[in-house]
Amino acid sequence: MSSFNFTIDAECPETWARAGTIQTPHGTIQTPIFMPVGTQATVKSVAPEELHAAGAQIILANTYHLMLRPGSALIDSFGGLHSFMQWHGPILTDSGGFQVWSLGHLRKLNEDGVVFKSHIDGSLHTLTPERVMQIEAELGSDIILPLDICAPYPCSPKEAKKAMEWTHRWEERALVEKEKLRPEQTLFGIVQGAFEPELRAQSAQVIGNMPFQGLSIGGLSVGEPKEEMWGMLKHVTPNLPRDKPRHLLGVGSPEDLVIGVGLGMDMFDCVLPTRVARHGGLFTRDGRVSIKGARFRTARGPIEEGCDCYTCQHYSAAYVNHLARAEEQLYFRLGSIHNIRFMLRLAGQLRDSIINGTYPAFRDEFLARYIPASEKVREAQREKWKEARDKRA
Image 1: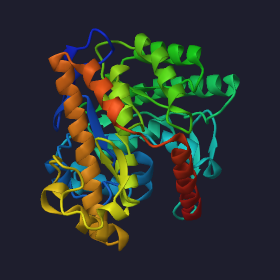
Image 2: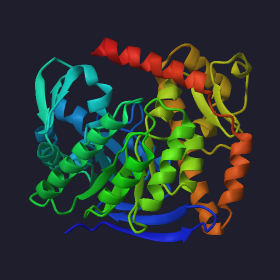
Image 3: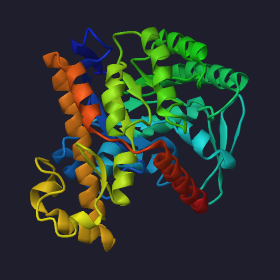
């Protein structure tokens, strides 16, 4: 039997925000929560004990990538992901469904599943809903996601409907296969529907009525303007069951957390905090700054006054500036720790504001001060990362 349990500790009557507690076999998670992403069983440049010290309660790993390297059977032989990577808190593994979209030039879809050409060595692999459940059972994560199809942006209503219906059928098959495997694992369903309001509402109702213990909202943050993303959530949340945790897949800039919580989301994950850190982008209460900037060259204080992260407690901004400009490996660790701690501290502040009944004021004050990256900057970053990905493939 699964020891998974979700309770709602407080709600904001003016919004859909809520604070909750999730029990898993490897520990308790207090929501809202941000999950650092450890795609290949590691959050890049940050050790598990450093994640714990930063306040991480749960991390996310990727089924597709771990299937290819080092292989789920090998991880299983070590006792599962927790033992293999020495992270003893909860782990969520996604299914590889996002790779169906992002590695589109390397795959073919059919009703049975997905045939992938490995981006590592060109070998062919097949993922079916059943095979994904088997791999995730070998990985031994606490929360697992089924195989789904993330429709491209933009796409036609016909394409969106086909991807959604295919996803629903795959999720039904995943539920059947999951019953044969590890009972202690918890399976979340995934809501799709692209950017069609009626499809989003329909998918939320269909998946919400299936016997999943939690729900992930997929297919967002795939290149659309943020207003469109928030608009889709307004069609999803009212159609979801209240008593199941809600996970917004692949979304996790600071403003995303603050707004997404008000739209009823409990769990967030994204590579953004560590990815932008590696390029010199560090989060502050006023927005993202470039630590490589000239103003930090002689700064004797921390990156941000009042920040309680390991980096700010031990090193001057001038030193971090030097490491970043010299592209020293230590910078990647220190910058990532700062951004991860910023996100986890923000999640804790959001939780406190919900419990204290001050979430709307906290949201408004944060958004009035925090200057997010512009759409133009985000698009330039996406293109740069796509080019890097295609070169690796």
